[in-house]
Length: 120
Image 1 (cartoon, rainbow, N blue to C red):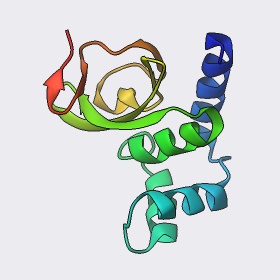
Image 2 (cartoon, one colour; image 1 turned 120 degrees about the vertical axis):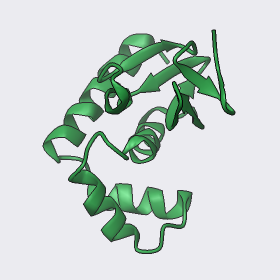
Image 3 (cartoon, rainbow, N blue to C red; image 1 turned 90 degrees about the vertical axis):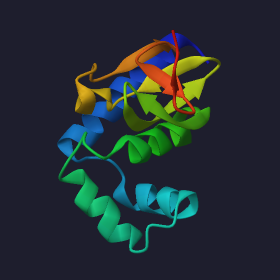
Image 4 (cartoon, rainbow, N blue to C red; image 1 turned 90 degrees about the horizontal axis):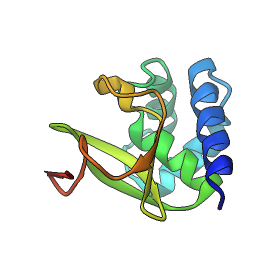
């Protein structure tokens, strides 16, 4: 997959989350198969009120559905954080909840980390 396709999809997805135009039913179905949070409909609806805060898993899962890749439960600085990796490239559309960029597409490097360790 080309980097331009990844970039276009990441920026479009970020915008969809910001303006509330994501396919909520698709997101509910995807998340229901990904994690057991009890009332998935309520979880997804409430999360949209706080975007980007607390939406890293939802956004990463939505991106994975569009792009493929692997969802990583890692870290951003000292914060638990979920993001997508495709061919060693991080795609993150919610790092701004921790002071990072709105959209990051690039190598796995600090402040992103895996399994509790930051990558230098």
